[in-house]
Length: 69
Image (cartoon, rainbow, N blue to C red; front, side):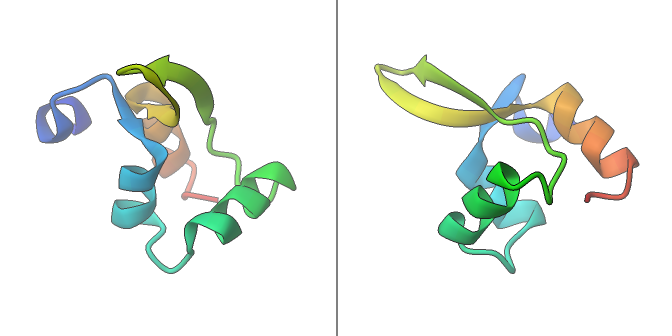
Protein backbone atom coordinates (compact mmCIF):
# COMPACT_ATOMS: atom_id res chain seq x y z
CA UNK A 1 0.00 0.00 0.00
CA UNK A 2 2.83 2.44 0.85
CA UNK A 3 4.67 1.46 -2.34
CA UNK A 4 1.60 2.30 -4.37
CA UNK A 5 1.05 5.59 -2.54
CA UNK A 6 4.61 6.87 -2.83
CA UNK A 7 5.93 5.03 -5.89
CA UNK A 8 9.38 4.52 -4.38
CA UNK A 9 11.16 2.19 -1.98
CA UNK A 10 12.44 5.03 0.18
CA UNK A 11 11.24 8.47 1.16
CA UNK A 12 13.09 11.57 2.26
CA UNK A 13 12.73 12.07 6.00
CA UNK A 14 11.03 15.42 5.36
CA UNK A 15 8.16 13.67 3.52
CA UNK A 16 7.76 11.17 6.35
CA UNK A 17 7.75 14.06 8.83
CA UNK A 18 5.10 15.96 6.86
CA UNK A 19 2.80 12.94 6.54
CA UNK A 20 3.23 11.20 9.90
CA UNK A 21 4.95 13.56 12.34
CA UNK A 22 3.75 17.00 11.28
CA UNK A 23 3.51 18.10 14.91
CA UNK A 24 7.33 18.04 15.05
CA UNK A 25 9.66 20.42 13.31
CA UNK A 26 12.71 18.88 11.63
CA UNK A 27 15.13 19.90 14.45
CA UNK A 28 12.81 18.34 17.07
CA UNK A 29 12.42 15.20 14.98
CA UNK A 30 16.18 14.82 14.59
CA UNK A 31 16.67 15.27 18.34
CA UNK A 32 13.99 12.67 19.13
CA UNK A 33 15.59 10.22 16.72
CA UNK A 34 19.05 10.88 18.14
CA UNK A 35 17.89 10.32 21.70
CA UNK A 36 16.07 7.10 20.76
CA UNK A 37 12.62 8.50 21.61
CA UNK A 38 11.43 7.44 18.15
CA UNK A 39 12.28 3.98 16.91
CA UNK A 40 11.96 4.86 13.22
CA UNK A 41 15.04 3.73 11.28
CA UNK A 42 16.55 6.56 9.25
CA UNK A 43 19.41 6.07 6.78
CA UNK A 44 21.82 8.72 5.55
CA UNK A 45 22.87 8.39 1.95
CA UNK A 46 23.78 10.10 -1.28
CA UNK A 47 20.65 10.24 -3.41
CA UNK A 48 20.52 12.53 -6.38
CA UNK A 49 23.98 13.94 -5.78
CA UNK A 50 23.31 15.22 -2.29
CA UNK A 51 23.33 13.82 1.21
CA UNK A 52 19.82 13.03 2.46
CA UNK A 53 18.17 11.24 5.33
CA UNK A 54 15.70 8.69 4.04
CA UNK A 55 13.31 6.10 5.43
CA UNK A 56 12.80 2.81 3.59
CA UNK A 57 9.15 1.85 3.18
CA UNK A 58 9.57 -1.50 4.95
CA UNK A 59 10.97 0.36 7.98
CA UNK A 60 8.14 2.89 7.82
CA UNK A 61 5.55 0.09 7.61
CA UNK A 62 7.12 -1.70 10.61
CA UNK A 63 7.17 1.54 12.61
CA UNK A 64 3.53 2.29 11.76
CA UNK A 65 2.50 -1.28 12.65
CA UNK A 66 4.20 -0.87 16.05
CA UNK A 67 2.14 2.20 16.80
CA UNK A 68 4.45 4.86 15.46
CA UNK A 69 6.62 5.48 18.50
